Length: 323
Image (cartoon, rainbow, N blue to C red; front, side):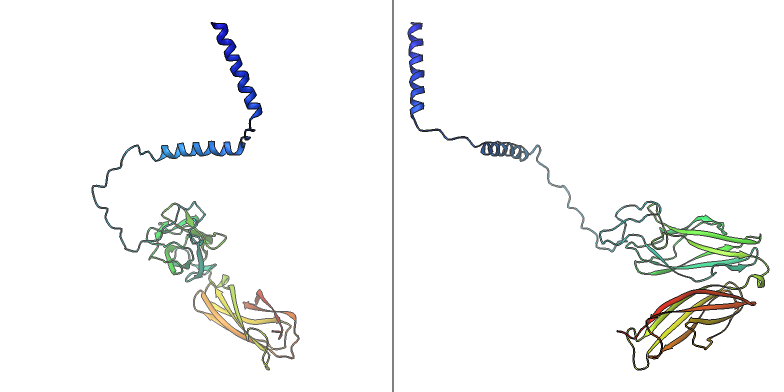
């Protein structure tokens, strides 16, 4: 019986082989289709698993309070590290400060030993964050000349606004040169300096009872405009110059406008200072169409104090009537 069953099975297998050999060819399976089908199957499985909730969330028991519409102080997107600024989504740095002027006590001012004085800086908030009473001016290094080394800002300073920051100080009793460096401390731990170099604000004084001995001009700041801005009229062009001269104590300064090429006329005058501070002088250089064009020219202030001359930096320009 077993032998008969084996014979029948073998005949059936042989017959099936012959039929397959004579029948139509079977299509070749596409490997890419197999991979895509498998991936879709896996994706469908994970999708199905993802949509199965593990727990149905309960509705809130209280209605959330509406958000306040009051204006809030701008905050940095992240706390600034010391000496660095935090960027905001506007692309403008959160912290940036520009020094505008020494309102009082110009650099190098002579102060009597032990005298009290008030140092005031004027700065502008050129960053994207608001400064308020949580910001303060703190001593960074140098001579404090004050028992207090942290001063809250006197008002809220919006981006683009300026502020005067003042500190009551007392000069040391020993003669010499003294300097103190100050920075704005943020509530987030970092400090803010001036401009791209991130420099500190500073106060520099000379302590001595011999005020006349050290009197002199300590700085000159120029500004100038051209009329017309480009080209020339039938009268040529006018260059309007200004120079802000700073003295460190009461006294008299003689000044003159030096220039090259020299046109044979001396322009200048005298300035009398009743105290340390700054004065601005003006002068216009008229260039006609007869003046030599396309050459480099310069203007500079020279001061004379007690027969000592000091020539400060030059203003360079090129005169031409070309548009």
